[in-house]
Image (cartoon, rainbow, N blue to C red; front, side, top):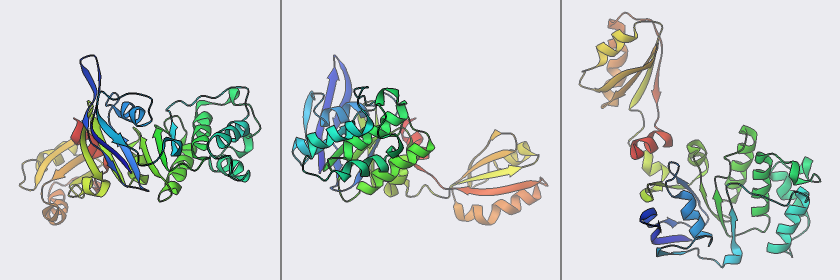
Length: 292
């Protein structure tokens, strides 16, 4: 549905986006992640028609009237009520849709109780919720969301993730985020960008394959240094380090060997062991591996 080919954007001699080719399947949720200044907002701005690419091309697969955009800091006329904001959005994008659609999106965004309040008194998190409600009220086919949950408390983030998840199969969603857990939870595919370049694109499962079960967290009451010393240099141990007192992070090259040898090795060291926990790699682990 969303496709870019060799997309680039230069400001002077510096590339903000450099030869990025993206493919987003219809009806999917695609997460665009990367460090600050990586080019995420610039990519979304080009797709939204708010910025002009220096070179390359893109196709959203639908008319511009079927595309909705949520900026990272949505703003509205302060004298309007939340209901009036959504009513205006509905009138501009889907005038023939039923009136109860307004109440539906306000409720989904967690704003039903403040529907009649003027938005000039809203917090940034409430404005973020309102922006998402205004974005979805017209049932667009493509949604471009820039950091939709960045200003929200845990409850607000939960509402936003639920809303985005409900759109799967009904619309194609691309959203940028620095909250990698959110991306891992709701996205079908992910694009990782750094310094304007696309480092990886594909399914999260494909990104994490082979990464699971290679790290163990060993917690001890004492003897941290002895554990690090005793495990370092073993053939199946890549590294053993203590990031904090009482905790040893063990990266292994052979999970099968670790499963049979780690507990006996700790027993020979005569240290009080609290727990041994295998750590499954997540998106944040792999993101840091790719970008550092």
